Length: 183
Image 1 (cartoon, one colour):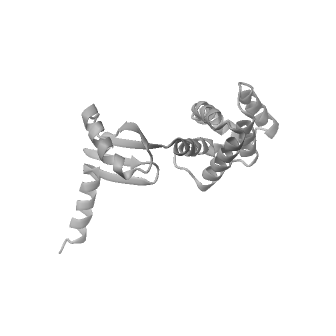
Image 2 (cartoon, helix red, strand yellow):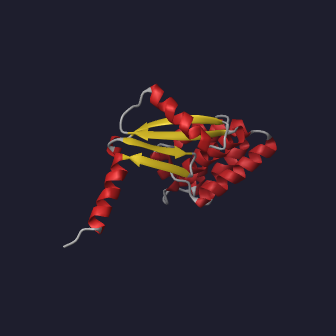
Image 3 (tube, helix red, strand yellow):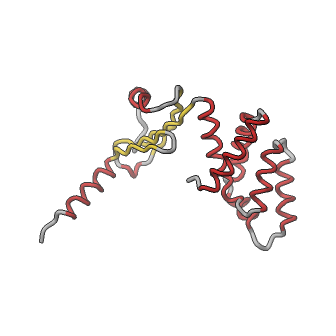
């Protein structure tokens, strides 16, 4: 899920509070578990439904928080519910995870390919990517997307993308041919 400005603001505020209270890792773990829960769109739809009273929605959140949710996370959920931004929760949790990784010195590398690559191929890619990262540790995420036809797309962190897919090359070639077509 793409982070929005709102999600980033909430995540940064939560991260700073968690740092101040020394619970960054605990909050990160809880957000991961809650992310799975909020991954079910029915919960988000319930919490955003205009016909369900605010009290009922808060009751649902209290029930969720009864299972050992840190007060910072509970406060975040209540605030997001009150501001009708609970549908941003997954993005907030994702960006908080990025902030936690950066604090640990870890950068996430996503390699997207049309088919599963061999371990040797992943190792070679990681050794080449390593020099472009400013973090000492890299965490590899593998994704398979047959629609890219071939090649790879590499996402370094959340702000750098290197697209070497066949699909992108064909699309680029098509644009150039159409642009230079003469009648």
